[in-house]
Every structure is written in C-alpha cells, then in structure tokens.
Image (tube, rainbow, N blue to C red):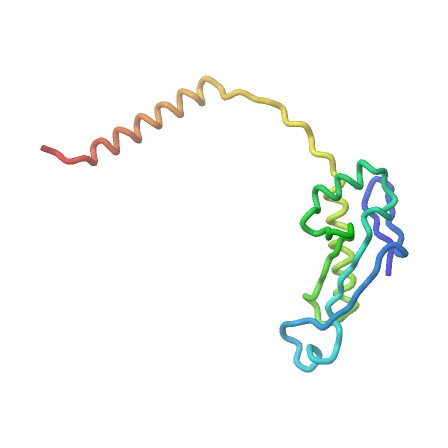
Length: 138
C-alpha cells in the first residue's frame, strides 16, 4: 500500500492504513463467488499526523463515514480486480481527507441592488396580473 498525500505537506504513512477484503457483489461470473475483490481501507482518525483542530474538522465533515471507534472507512467494489479496487479506495480516501481539511472562506454579506428589487416587484406584479386575467369573466 502507498502513503496518502492529503495536501499542505501532510503525508499519511501507509502503516496507519489497513486494507480489508471481502467478496464483492454484482457482475463478474465465477469471480464473484470465489475471489475477495471488494476492498475497504480503514484509518484511525486519532492516529493521523495532524493537529487536534484539523482532526476535529475531519470528524465533523466526515461524521457519516466515521464509526463510534473513530475509524474512517472507504470501500470500493467497482472493479473486478482487488488491486484496482484498492487503488480506487486509496484515491477516494485521499480525496475525502483533502476536501475535509479545506478551510471554508468566510461569507461576505451582500445586499440586493435597487434595480434587482424593482425587477422582482415588477415581475411579481406581472405574474399577479396574468393570474388575475385567468379568473372567471362575468
């Protein structure tokens, strides 16, 4: 297995990663019945070489993928070979960790322009007029 480069000079050593294999579903003929091609990559979030606040950010952003023991799991079974699934799962793990560590830019408050407010009111009046004309004529 290879090390994961999650950006900003941070490398997750392969020793912290664990690969688990199991039988995969889907097409594949006899392969499906006898080979373990599904690969699950597991890493303990607490063991990552990151400061505590960055680990906390990972826990918050990837909460749905982290279990009670604090391990992050990524599974791949799209390919018919174990090696290809392992590479795919490692790439996905790398991408998830990289995206989770990106700091969100603070939002700048903006105001609607006078022209946009007037346009909205004008369109509302036009729509109301169209609906009024659909009514019953007496």
